[in-house]
Picture 1 (cartoon, rainbow, N blue to C red):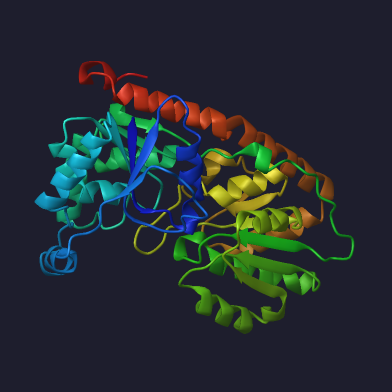
Picture 2 (spheres, rainbow, N blue to C red):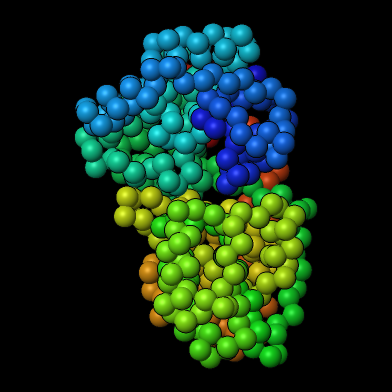
Length: 386
């Protein structure tokens, strides 16, 4: 029995976690969460919620604002979580996201069974310039049995922080390829190119770069359209920018889209944009899920040399990469790309092949199960294995 801890089970953008947990076969998963959301969208039978204590709000102010140190679970919460874990007969705890594992450090240290933590990108560098947060993160990394990361770039970042390299395992996002079958695109002959970006509307997704590059492209191809599928705090800012750039009538902001509608949008588009960048607070990508899904369907992807993206895309072969925040370079590559439809088709085909080779879901779940089984071995056997 493996217990999977998600603070919220699950937010809409966490579909990849749901796919991962529900695909497990060699171990039986149970879920522990502080709260449950979107239960109809993410059905799962064995979910136990251990709510925040009544004092959580005041403790958060005391820890985060007055002392500027990470908020840790209380003694009472730790005892309740251990009781649930023992009741479920869990042999291991998988904590999703590094900052949540820091919050659960008293549990990791107090429970008698091993824990692993998985880092996905946003949870690596944020707040680590603060000595108390860096210290707590290092204590957490020292206390867990294994550290799972989605990309080599995250592996390197954690090693620089001070994580023992022998603890780190690369465990990539898995794409269910039966749901994202390759389909060759027919390129428009009238200039009506359809661009798509699907992501949360947050700084690290590079949406400003996308809009600026599209505005340049649209001056040459006035019939082009750009759809942005997702929700987030930058919505009003993006709407204002589209107006300033003179492309508001060619931009469609759809909000969050369920998977069936999003897949239809993928197949109805010609080019996928994802020019990710490091956000001001240090937030960065692992390997974006939506980008991998787009590649699997046969959409050529234009992105950036950021985070784990170059581990999925070889520039000029399985996609096109430019530097972060370089809207002019992105526009030039887009204009050059549509001028050579044969090259665009070859990039699309090789992009789908790259996803199949490195990100196929069943293989990635098998590797995750291997990590679980390794972590549950006696410490002298587990650490340094693999």
